[in-house]
Length: 227
Image (cartoon, rainbow, N blue to C red):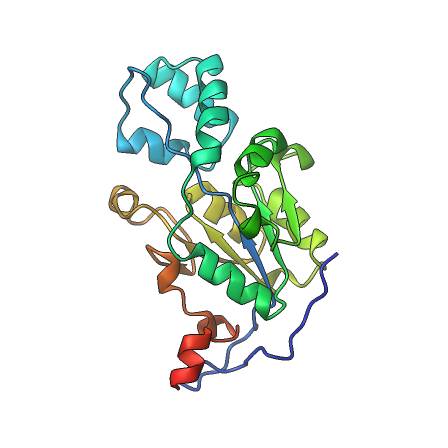
């Protein structure tokens, strides 16, 4: 279980407004993979509807593209080790780890897939205090189970002190169903398809745009040194 530290957290933002509640724990989704075509075509809408789900996403791709489950299984195993990190994720996770903010990953994927993906980026994933997978809970996103299980594993703080980073609409809904703060980090084109279909507390298009002080978290070192 992770040890929490609040000695460096702040209760007011850059404008002097009180932050209530102050975020003490962070939970990340494991980025949704874009499926290779394998001779089939699919639209952005099909892909955006599928990310963040599991059984539903497989059924969607089978019905609308003709890709079979065996192909999807092999494709995930082949593609996961070569997935590139989102811009800003290493900077953010390193920063939170430095300031002893407990962190977890909550992924709809089965652990066997998560293990393959995390095996390549050990420097990043070793900084997390817990990884909760779809195998560990009864109900997947948009149900709150994954985030509640991850929260329990990193100290069981009040749900409204947890901040979730998600790239899918079902993931954002799951975070809100768990009574947590949610930051949506989507593909910009997805927001055009679903301009009103999310309940996120904030939308950013890169983790490089995240301002931790808005949530009571310590500022990035380069920001504090220039203040």
